[in-house]
Length: 207
Image (cartoon, rainbow, N blue to C red; front, side, top):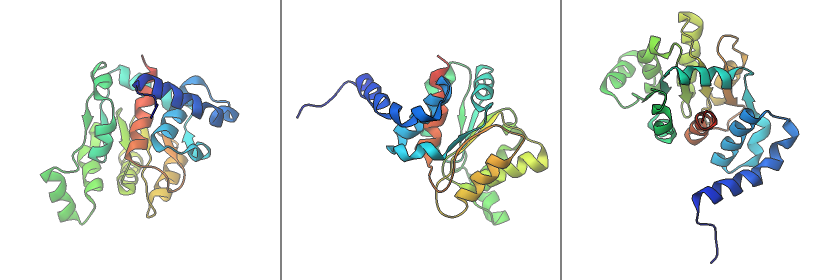
């Protein structure tokens, strides 16, 4: 069987296939890359109509990353998917504590999800950082609570949790917030690979 084996050619061909599906949105180059990476990670061109980017999200993220901002994630799958080598060029690190003992203990004592507990423990560390949520709507709800009640302001929130309980509502709340730029996907679509892809699109565009 004859098929493309070179990874660069595979990626290039994939982007060529995706391009016609986003042309009608008249996106600038940086935004088009985010759309393309999300679609590429999902294998679904039907994502395009549901992607939402705050007008300042990409530039705010780039500015923060160039200053060495860290990235805080809700689950290990998001952390694993982010290109840490690229991030390290600017001095940043990816953090996830969903499996830590202190996270489990807080979750049990407060009767909350570990995702909520993790964001609560991160607390002030989220100020000026990139938050990438790809799995747990409760993590996104908690970050938005910290924004509203504690005035903790991440540089950007990449909030793309997936699922049927709370995912759509948490992302709607994110898109309605007027304090922090965001990248999200409306409705139930989302997931860890999608959140990681959005972050990577920005990292790759910084080269």
